[in-house]
Image (cartoon, rainbow, N blue to C red; front, side, top):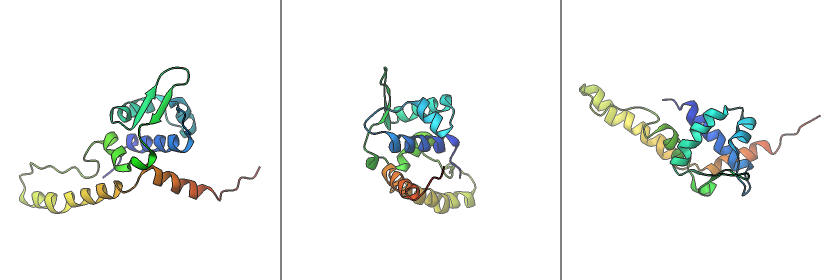
Length: 143
């Protein structure tokens, strides 16, 4: 039960976009510099996000990426499914020949997967951005 760096970095990059984009495109280079993530790795992640309908790219001098939908319409579950695939938590082998393992798959592991998926579908990108902004509003920087 582990989310890969692809899922974690992809979510972090989308958070960066959501926090910093105000109707303008954000480049991979900008996100890479702010988040200290390899540009090449972000290109692979953004390719999946584009194919999954989460972001849209625009070419040209003013090019970059934008979210396809409002932040409030994109769930964390949707993002992770695009980046990690359907079974991102516990891989359940439905062709198991062991009776006890088959029972555990149906009655434990599937239920855990469903609970996690249901929970992630209740959290939107907007929710995370709001929580992040609340957590950073009381930080005072001294020079």
